[in-house]
Image (cartoon, rainbow, N blue to C red; front, side, top):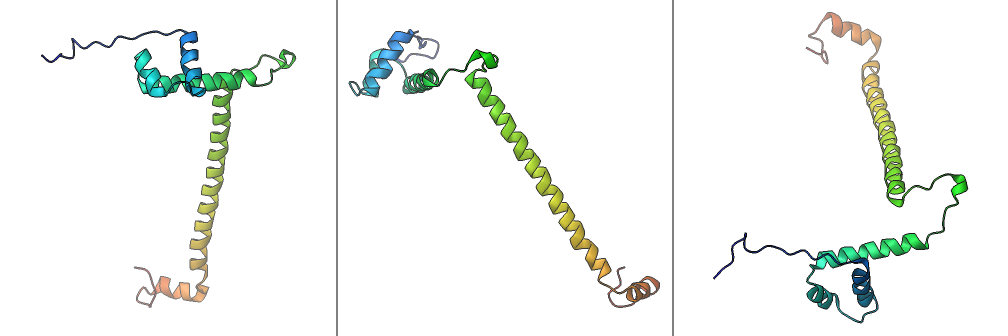
Length: 137
């Protein structure tokens, strides 16, 4: 007999930091394979991968030199990352604006000389008599 979706409820197990740490360290020290850990703890591979990523981020953060509080309160790494992204995006947008203005100026310069290339006497002829060759309708 097949189970319906309502009958197949996912049971979520909440593991503490120590269990997660043991699982990640057992993989990193190659004592157990990731598939075995997933099977034993009944967690999907993506959950285990997330634990590993968070463990690595925590280790990197813990090993960073501490900021002295004399300079003011330190920003969280997440906030520092967001501020850095914002700064980079503003630099990129200002570069785009400069590039756009240069392109617009170049286009204006390219259009302007075409009118000035004709001698003024030839312009007068075309203005008076539209049948002259090269006159615009």
